Length: 565
Image (cartoon, rainbow, N blue to C red; front, side, top):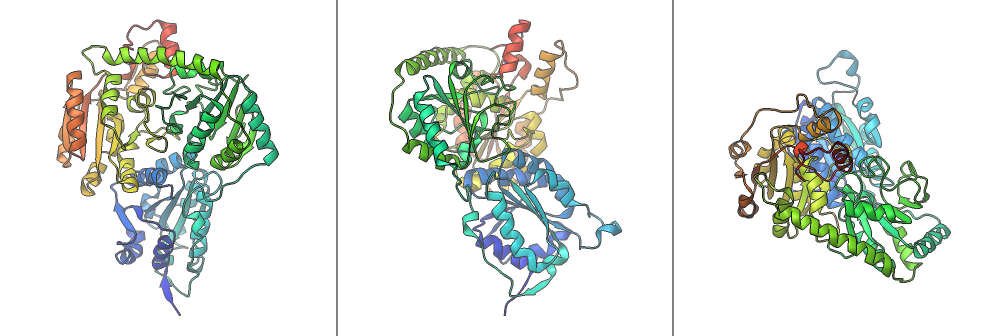
């Protein structure tokens, strides 16, 4: 006979699911868990963070790189702080197990300090939320959480464990795991074989087809199949901003990012002229499609996705449900090699013209930091690094100007919700999942949301270089105001801050870039001496014509001469 308490059962089950890291911080309701954790810390490393929101961002990035569910734990009092991170994971389909402890059952009606209806709060932003009423149910609920989080459209699942359940004892608990759900995709679902054959025929008959990959391709780990199919059928491949990595962007069939954020005049023109859009793993949201204009709604669209909710949601399309990697393998088996010389030559001519334009931008001399030049110098230093970019200058310029050398998950954007402050904590999770050099591109608006995690970065000696665009404003909102509110903006600016001094206070190496001549030597030095922060004295987005389709269209309409690009 074996007697175990709830905390012991939880940790034993996590070990059975091959969990290596749990991100979180202690509280009064989790004391019993921490008492047992000391015995497991060699097997399951607890990563102490400075803010519960950031623990979820760390787990989110870990899950994206490791292809395992990210695990988060937090006390009752911290549960509401987790909401931004859980919402991001839910919208972007990241598998997470969110473990929250709570005050004892039955005490919630007595106004016990920190008690709140966690399940009610999490219900709308998780796939499921479970309260453990009895210690004997704990192993079953943990198995259910992993199963639901990793199957179908992945996502976060909450397990709420009252502190008395952690302390209770039970004889001979049902301790076992379902190992196929310890990673994702857990089970690869495939739609009807006849439908797949019809799709194969359509792809071969089209004159000007284009493949557009969303983030679902990366979740499915289908980048090799995308490349193989593109080469087999001579089809150009673009990606949404979050699907970047579906194919090496140095591949001759890659057209880079398409759509409203990070898409170029070149890539979007190819989509506009295509006669068939093969859409893989995209939720067709407003940002990826520039408010559903790229592609236009009159196109013939074939949509493959694991999510019934997203299939044909906005576009009238021919829908195939299932795992992208598995379905592409079926399509490849049903197709023959063909060449589309005329279409390929047309695309290549447009690409050459566009690349010449980018070259001119990189060589442009000015008294402000040249963003394409910065990305180019960064690219020269990147080998097997992983990039994480917050919304703003970092995300859009990286999406547009940086070309991924390899296929696979090498870059992370948090465009589920697009909130500020993601990339700095995410660097911790990405590093622990990969042990590679992490490059963060963030803005000063985002930095102030997560500055406390610089201490976490230093404590765990995370191999990260933080590139910070310092323009003393919420630049994206400022640009939106300038473009859409008669060139006026209100309350978007804040006091200038020397972020290099702040980072030094946390023990990071710090550098400043104030002119273009500093870019190459400073980046080289900062990549060698990590953890480090590079404070780039930038200008605001309203003076930069970043590759955001509706900004460019509005600037042309207004003949706005304030834009530099």
